[in-house]
Each structure stands twice: as C-alpha cells, then as structure tokens.
Image 1: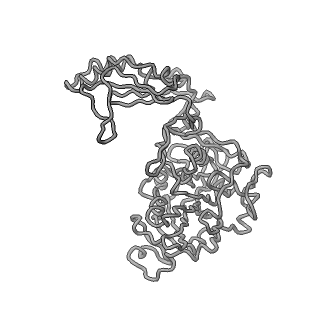
Image 2: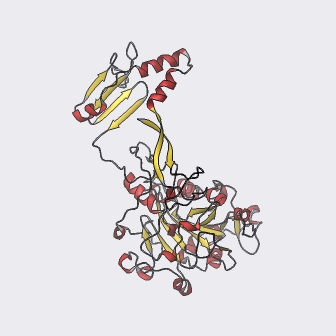
Image 3: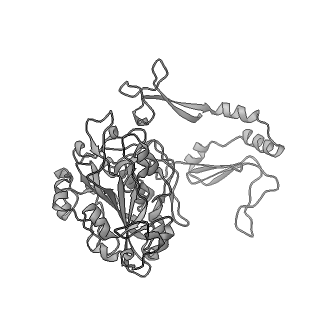
Length: 463
C-alpha cells in the first residue's frame, strides 16, 4: 500500500513527457493526452518510519505510539460477518446515561467496532470501510459530493475522469414549466435559425420550432451557432433545494457531442495555454437531482464542447465576476417554497469579433468578447422576476493577437439585451423590474445611450 504521489508518464531521452501520439507534451496541453504508464506513491512503510523518527511533544508521541502499536481488527472479516458487534483492544466505551451519547471509559484506548456491513476504527481518528452498500462510484467526476441541505449527506466516492451517460434518448433538456409558469427559451430570428446546427434526426429530443436544433442534456439545453461553433445560448434549470456541493475539479475531460457534426462544434485543438474552455451553463447549476448519482450525471453533461466558449483564463477563473450570482439570487430573492431558477446564458456575437486560430487548428473561428446571462425566478411575493447581465472578458487584451477593449460587469435591461443579441426574450421583458425603475442612480451614470447598472457587489442588483 502507498499514498498516491503522482502519475508517471513516458518520456523521451531529454526527460520530456510524451503524448499518446509520440509527440512532446507541452504545458497547456490536455493532461489526458499524456502517455501515462504508471503511478508513483510513498510506501506506507516509509510513512510509518518517518513518523516513528519524528520529534514530537510527549502528548503527541503517546498518541502516535498508541496508533502504531494498535492490533487492528480485520475490517473485511468484520464487514463480511454482517453481525453487529464490538471489538476493542482496551476498555469499552460505554453510553453516557444522561446524554445518550458515547461517554468516556476510565482509561482511554483505541476502539474498533462493526455494525452491519461497516467496520469502524477509532483512535480518535475514525476510518469507515463499507462493503455491499449502494455505490455511486463509477459516475462521479471528483473525490466527494455532499448534499447542500441540513441533515443530508451522501457518501464519498471517487472517479478518475468524467463519465458521460450514453442514454441520449432519456435527456429532456430545459424544462419550460420548471417554475410552474411557462418560460420559453429565447426566440431566434429566421436568419439565425439558418445558421443553427442541426441535431441528427435519430437524436432529436426537442419540441416545436426548435426540435431539429435543440441539444437536450440533463437539466439544460443548447442551440448551436455553427459559424462560431459556439452556442447561441445554453438554457438551464436550477433547483436550489436539491443541489449537491461539488469538490474542486482536477484534470477536466471534455467531449465532442456525437449527435451533431464535429465541424460545427469546438474541439480540444482550439484550447491552449491562456485560452480556457469556459462553461456556459455552470457545472454547479446542473449539480442537482434526486440523488448524488443524478446530480453527478447532470454535472458530467456540462463537459461537452457544445457548452463552452473560448475564454481568456483570467476571465474564466475570475471569482469576482459572476461566480455565485445564481446562488445569491436563490438565497436572497427566490420564494422559499420554490427555490428554483432558470438561467439562460450565451455570448454576444458581433461582426467585429476577432478571428482565432492556433497552430493545432485547421480552421478559424470568431471569438466572442462579451457574454450575457438572464436569471428567472419567482420572487417572495409570488411575482416573476427576470434579471439580465452582461460581462466582457477585457482580460483577453493581455493575450497576443487580440485588440484591447474595456467592458465591465453590469445589469442590463432585457430590451437592450435584445438589441445586442437580436434574440427575442418574449414575455420575460415584462418581468424585468430593473427596466421598470425610473430613477438613474450613481451606478448607472457610467453608461450612455442605454440603461445599465454597474455591478460592484451582489447588493447592487435590482431584482
């Protein structure tokens, strides 16, 4: 046994890591392309030896000696027995009659016990090994998932990479009646629809006018601009009462969607150092469902190239932009008994957008410089609210080949957003309470020719 340290990749004579195709892997390339040949770990025996020789205070040394000299039970045999029981090397811990909680024995000692199909070792560290329980391992994309609500949690589980559910027919995409009132996706013009990529006929799950074009995923839908190879918009349902907290990501793996032509969507070749695969529908927004497995399946679905855009790394990773915007609106403004929200987001396509192409690409693609978002929820008074936002990735000016520009994060009226995108947001415009305010305060003064509000903090948002 060993504590995992790092992966070991194949190298050339100069010590450079090699990719599966034999080429040298460079910083910024996808780690999944490396020709991994093994794993490197620190032996447990080496860890033990290091601990035994460590200089420790007397109290810590006594605890360490106790742990290292413990004759541990066979956890596997205890689990297999499936009979509640107790194993201890020292005096038993007895219940505290007053509190009903475990009390203290006269002399402290490590305790291990088995209940059902779990083995528990306590020294005071607690390690639990479970066998035969329902497991979500094999579907999670990271080391652990926890339920975001009082008193509810799910077991830890691990997986080395994202796994995509192959049951394409089961995906129903964006639910128009999710808020118990009908909220349609934005309406494309006839010209925009002609530039929209079509879904293969045997994989069309959409309905109405968008049936040939709607890519349905778990908890969200996408319509693709085939010229930009980027979505016109991604429309998601967010359930604040059934969300799961996700652990930090490592080694993301993204996927081409097999339901549409590869030359109408981005691929890994488009991304290099400084250019990120920026989520449109955030993985956190899709991380909900009736179980952790459901939430993980939905989260994994956000790792399709159809749900990303070319974004400068500082813009994509900036925590002070609109990271957490949806959670703020859900917590502070949504009706408590209906903590749900629709989030529709996409790029602002402009004829002046710079063209992008790197040495690995055999095509050029325009790079959008602004992004918009609309959050729709039912307010505490029962009325519908639609708030629009716009954000520019001005940090892209630091990268070679792009012209500088300066656009800040702002709340924007849906009428203005229609002018910028040529999309039609329909009746949602009547739920835009920011547009209905008549006074123009200090925060609005920075923009001319239209009403926008600089967002310096979430408290500046008019809902």
